[in-house]
Image (cartoon, rainbow, N blue to C red; front, top):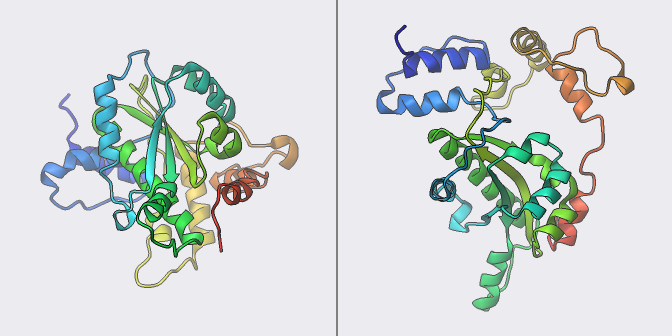
Length: 280
């Protein structure tokens, strides 16, 4: 059987993702990268093969080549190698497969360095408000996304982990984070033991807007997405069934409503303020 072309892979992945057929333009050399991005999935099982330090460093450098607000570069990456530190973080993140993850990174928002510049250059820090927090968080998120793309471009698997924010105070203590530096997400990297599935996404008709925002058909489109996703990738279990009961039909919208019906990270705002940020 002939090998599937990058263009065919893109078409199949996009149809599975969004439930519509795409008329693709001429892609040329960019087809391979687009195929990688549209067909990706988060890897949660890794082989025992280590990731060469030089390769990990290349992926990290690629991530830190991503755009950054006003060239402020308010994002750092912390590599966690020490087994004791890993055990502490695993206890917070609570994914058993992390025990076999070759590389564990923590993406940090770093507004401390900007404040140091003002001290060193004897300039007032005139933007001590919510934007300082927001810019640093977004910079870290951009670097995280770029790291996933770089890792998967060289054949590695990647899985972002927001659960590291479940106990930011403990993470701050374990990783010795100073004020104005906080974790945005962790990232597991390794050689995938299996091909991750392509998860269906909400239709572009709902999530892409032109000129003005319009969600007038949101209920209808989400209900259709629920049904399509259930056909492709039904949930194996219903979240918190003992609290919410068993739904006759369990789609994405029910899953996400149940997900945020339980309090989560309610102390994050306090942690951020205690780290020095003013959020006015």
